[in-house]
Length: 290
Ligand SMILES: Cc1cc2nc3c(=O)[nH]c(=O)nc-3n(C[C@H](O)[C@H](O)[C@H](O)COP(=O)(O)OP(=O)(O)OC[C@H]3O[C@@H](n4cnc5c(N)ncnc54)[C@H](O)[C@@H]3O)c2cc1C
Image (tube, rainbow, N blue to C red; front, top):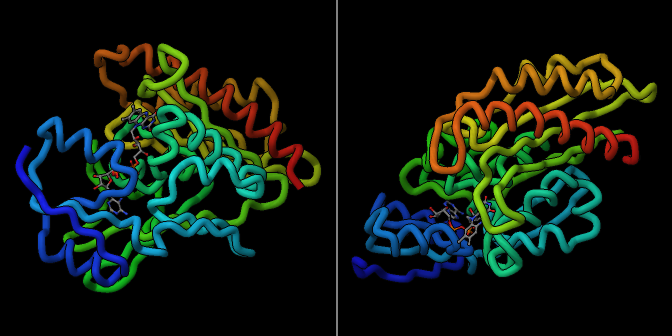
């Protein structure tokens, strides 16, 4: 492996100046469960690994009146071990609790999962259906990007030279909101999704769907926002028929490829089924939410 420096800045400003200095010869290190594997595998060569866990903003997990402030390097276990977060953000907790196993979850962050921008990443669809926003710092100051637009290709994101992800903000859910994420893997755990689906629904006081979001994993070069499928649910009762129809439409919004984990046709079918099932769980949760 090409030798590199380990740097551990403690402020946002220092991270930005370090990343600006090294450009694409540096990478951030959060839990390291992607970047260290990729480095050892020779996927890329760097001169500096910038550990961001010493920056307080990146380790903050705070549930404010406006929503969830999730530091980019907070490990998954802190997300699902917080009862208040689990109650308000069930879809995100579904994802945090299936990434790898317990050991991986004690290191791996949602921020790292997002920045790695894998089409099969398990947290990104959940963030999308919760309307999450990525908060970015860089040489020109701070900016915000909706998570739905953060990934631009396999392993590629919108971050520019010198920029990094500070935190993810997830707005406070509306009343009668529910969300869920499900994936299919060929074994019980420790595998990458062949396909995944995140869904959220908001019901009105009469029980009709007034808002819905659907996002699909591993069926395109980036997580796919299935907006036509979600639109088909508006003003409808949360019935199995409505969810089956949304599943059929979502399947048409996919652009999968054949690979060692499954064929494109198989992924289309999985998207149909996972969308339907995920919507059903999201609706049940919405009925139980205040
Ligand atoms: C055994 C095993 C099982 C796994 N199972 C799953 C699974 O089930 N589902 C799944 O989705 N993934 C899985 N993964 C992949 C990985 O664990 C996740 O993607 C994890 O969430 C990455 O988080 P991390 O904190 O370890 O990221 P890191 O490895 O530290 O970083 C990932 C990438 O993001 C960049 N980065 C990190 N933080 C920032 C930041 N703040 N700003 C800018 N760039 C940043 C890094 O430079 C790197 O390119 C697995 C990995 C292993 C080794």
